[in-house]
Image 1 (cartoon, rainbow, N blue to C red):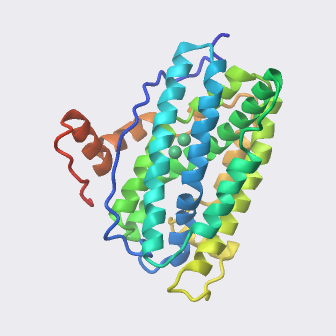
Image 2: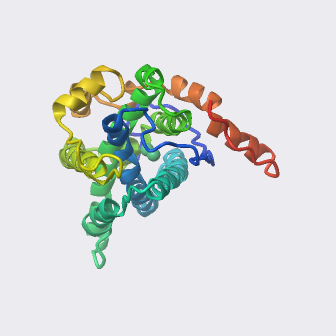
Length: 307
Ligand SMILES: [Fe+2]
Ligand SMILES: [Fe+2]
């Protein structure tokens, strides 16, 4: 099958084996901003299970790929997402050590990805391929949001102004940059397996509302579970919008407009975000630089600095 689109970056996706030191991370890593902190913390609740699920879906899709370059990109994507999942898992472990137990929420997320969106045993070959293609379409729509959020993280001076903790900023921007870097892969895989427009629409029709629901529940959960807040802080849309106007969260209306762009017939992920900005950040990210040094000279593991 020919490549699905002429608008395509030629990618060599490199998994960067990053490590972060969370020992100094305060519970509210945006100082005095628990709502902004926990709204972003929902990423840590969703991504370890979610990105492990991406990895499984893409491994299941490998036998159906007939384009060598796309296969290489899918393998690079799998390598990057596997490291993302583990990096966010370490933050969850740190939250638990600070008295905020994320496990009840994570158990629900795990159930969703394994029981509802997981592989169904006993399918015929045709139905199995269809089921995998459908899940790839869900991943492609979610990857539209991760690229949007990654692009936002790379262009979010409000977080610097609010003096967000530098190690968390590096995690968000390293991960965000890799999301921008590999933003086409899931979409191109979906189109390779099924070029039909309705597949793309169905992917967004499920993933958009599901992500919104999980995010709202996640913010409520974290604010209720935060041992320093005693359940006093109840999130509202109005608060979220005020925080977004101060640059600490993406504007909800911009996210909605971005989701609508995904539905345009001529859409391709390369139209969103900048690969050169992403690669530029990865060249300066403390964690990515330490990983590159370690890969060049494995006996010298340097931990990334906090700046
Ligand atoms: Fe990721
Ligand atoms: Fe991704």
